[in-house]
Amino acid sequence: MDVVMMEEEDDCPELVPIETQSGRPAEQIPVTIITGYLGAGKTTLLNYILTEQHNKRIAVILNEFGEGSALEKSLAVSQAGELYEEWLELRNGCLCCSVKDNGLKAIENLMEKKGKFDYILLETTGLADPGAVASMFWVDAELGSDIYLDGIVTVIDAKYGLQQLTEEKADGLVNEAARQIAVADLTIINKTDLVKEEELNQVRDTVRSINGLVKILETQRSRVDLSEVLDLHSFDSKDGANLAEKLQLVKSTRPHLDKSILTVTFEVTGDLSEEALNAFIQDLLWEKMFCNKEGQPMTVIRLKGIVSFAGKAHQVMLQGVHELYELNETPQLWVENPRINRLVFIGRNLDKDILQEQFTSKVVLGTEKK
Ligand SMILES: Nc1nc2c(ncn2[C@@H]2O[C@H](COP(=O)(O)OP(=O)(O)OP(=O)(O)O)[C@@H](O)[C@H]2O)c(=O)[nH]1
Ligand SMILES: [Zn+2]
Image (cartoon, rainbow, N blue to C red; front, side, top):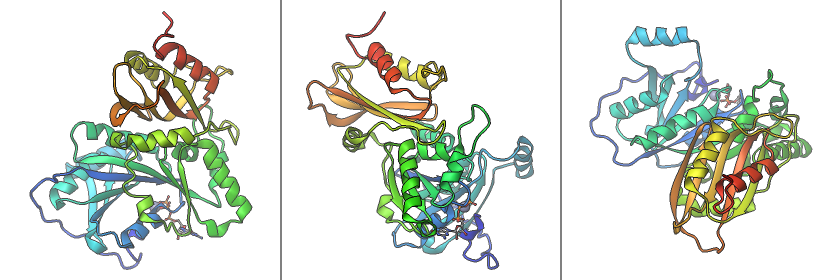
């Protein structure tokens, strides 16, 4: 229910016409994607963030892209000749905008018309694949956009989360609730008032079994410390030291529920061939060339690592979401000798032994097979 945004259902503020302001923002603006299954508490979280003291001018985007039929889309486009979007002013000078399709363009339009905000929060619909939405922002940042992807936050219903995670999907399809957890930088288990400690433990264990890297918070009414949600810099290579530290603590997980998504992590010593690493990742993400022992193709949803290239003094950060990945040098110099590459893969049908063996034989210099 996204209309909660408008204070009271029966007292909706009028849409405010927007005056055009000139001037582009000088700095890139962070966008946090807020995802989570139907009714988990996403809108409650947005409302909470907006009413907290933050001294930020936040634009909230209620996103419907990727949803709806082609017919609806073409109707929306031809009706207005432009994007379907509407926005209203909120407290604290914040803005709320509802966009349908082509979210990025709409956000850029919004910025052009309204001038600079400090922060963008984007709520996806409950069934959306946040990976697809995230990769859109990620690509755009590369192209010199005004926006960068700060992090993906997934809200989970403490009471119904487990049930949603175990829902059987048609063959070959990944459970959306599990996918949303797999891709997250932060998960918030909400509605803890509705469950007993034992149930909550089960939810927490299941979240951890899917994503061995993600931070887990527990809330009622989505009340979180804003510093734990905003400015995560999850994709920022300047934050390489932080990731390097986290990777040392991650453990591979076991599937908790049938056919569930899990985390695989390993360390490999030595320098990598950049070319071979690219080929390996592309085989994995795009060609889906690697299979587990049952012959099922491995599907990676999120990927992170700190790797070493021969002749480079700096650590290199590897990030992957959906079918996109990036390799970026971090400011961090290698100090450990020999250098240790650390990788984390979150996805389905992953087999640690096979992945590690493939990685070692194909990518680590001095061990490549012809
Ligand atoms: N008991 C309880 N109810 C909550 C809590 N947080 C949110 N709710 C209620 O749960 C319902 C759904 O919350 P929303 O914030 O609209 O959830 P959403 O994820 O935005 O939902 P959709 O956009 O429909 O997918 C609302 O009626 C909230 O008032 C909580 O911590 N405890
Ligand atoms: Zn909502």
